[in-house]
Amino acid sequence: MDFNSKKEKLLEQLNKATGINFDITDSSLSEEETINKLKELVVHFNVIDSKTGLYRLYLTGELAYSDAVSSLSRFHIEENIPRQVFYMESHQSYTKESVSLLKSMLPESHDVVIELDAKHLIVILNYQITPNEESVKQNANQFLDMLEAEAFTSFKLSYCSPVESFKEMPQAYKSAVLAMQIGKTFQHNYRIYDYESLGLGRLLFNVPRTEVETYIERHIKADILSQIDEETLNLLDSFFENDLSLAETSRKMFIHRNTLIYRLDKFADLTGYDVRKFSDAITVKISLMLYNYIKSQ
Image (cartoon, rainbow, N blue to C red):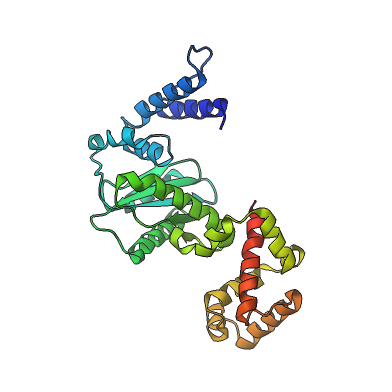
């Protein structure tokens, strides 16, 4: 990010914090000194006067740990307790009602909801003991269910494992943001993405585009993949999730076993791959994921 972009971003943050429009027309400071001075002003207005401001700047890397930790006692923030960082993205701009609903669901006064922008929120939960995976998923589902039922707003949510100290929170936030990017690319039909559960997606997300295109060209060409309809894609996802079981997939998809077989046969005729065979299923799974990766760029 160049000097002007950084400057405008910081001036915008000052405007949000104070309600005053700032402009720099003349300065004896260097560009680096100007940016640092603006950061100091942002810290003053957003951190010293606001707990959510402290969290927001610290999580997004705009406030160093050494600067953030000095303000913890002011806001009664404990440094070494388990915390969970949830990153949330709405399909459209969320309402103030969505924020109020989330705040009403927070069990502890130290928990916070942070408004990043018109479509993104962060929820931070504090714990006495580190929660298990099931508890974390339960919280995630409760947030999304409540927002859909009461605020009529659809969100996606991502997270990584809980962290044990304040110092680890920026990395947890980065992992949650990355989980959202990977999840929307490879599991767009899902609404919750756990960073630790995106193993194959995390691996493929870092493959160079040229390698991706080469793989698809050698296996299932992009023009063939583009012909696969949404219903078939959902059926394949279910088939893979149910360990290539015809019976279980039929039950979960509410279709007759013979209908499922017929559709898999049609897919085999189109692509040359029979996903009932393990090796073919792997090739199709990876090809579809890589095709979604290309489309997302």
